[in-house]
Length: 139
Image (cartoon, rainbow, N blue to C red; front, side, top):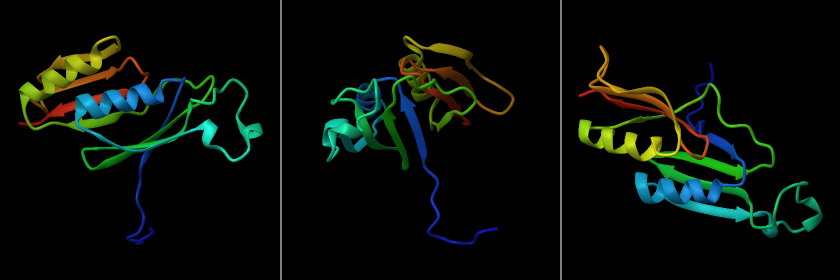
């Protein structure tokens, strides 16, 4: 096992052309903070823009949500997340329900918001940007 304290795990998501919109939504609605957004037009050599990508598509972006970095890019033909989830632990039932309504709007619900044996509220969903979320309120 690596005992290197400089090791840090972050999450990276590929979007189908809506990375900027998703990050702006998460910043405004989840209280995140966009740290940076670079586009394909920022590349030193425009010949390196992938087929199907537009100059204004996101090459690399970083947002911090709840102390965790989320990074992303616009990748032509990207597939939505399938078996990985971003898990938000939220302090209150009210805020958990607000977040559930916000993220499920235009998305797909896998497990509706409800009380479980392990949480006051729990839900699993995919938002309108293709990002999978687990919402958890333990108290």
